[in-house]
Length: 240
Image (tube, rainbow, N blue to C red; front, side, top):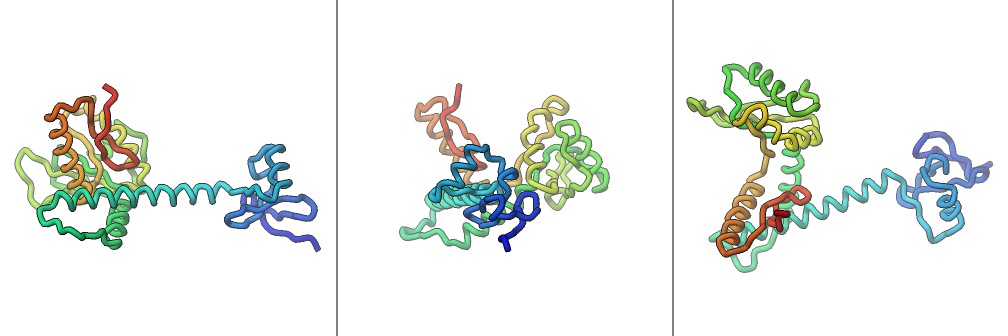
């Protein structure tokens, strides 16, 4: 009886004795050669060499996400150390608690779906705020605003100074799309703008970076600016 299993791509049975198909070397699930996306030469090379491994698209994506998470953790450690060095109460043998990093990663993931909108006229009802926010977003982006949630930040209203609005999207991709089109807001309204929903650590780190940037410029350093690298603000050389 030939060995059979289901292809990880099409979910149909794979007959190894007849078709000489192969498995992903990470998840060990089988895949038809026709479903693998490989050329005939690549398939023959993999099937003929024991030392050559095959990784499916899903496992490659998971490896990439793990790599990005490791980079984020390293960036967080760097940020934490910078903040602690800037603190007046810094102690000599201070270490970075793992709980602090884990909490910060979770908080950033949670806030990645959020956008803060500033200077939108404040209404008496949340329903009217929703209509106004949807109208602004539709002018600068094609993301769906059907299921967004929002609320004003702050307790009391101030005359002639509307409170910022936190907008919560279904996913981070929608939030990123709106943030990328922030410049378009200047074309339709010179006062309204949007920003990322930063954690306290991110805001402190950005504030320290701005102070450092001004100090370096005052000391004669030229062509430097703050840019976001993999979501982390850093001082880099500018193109101009």
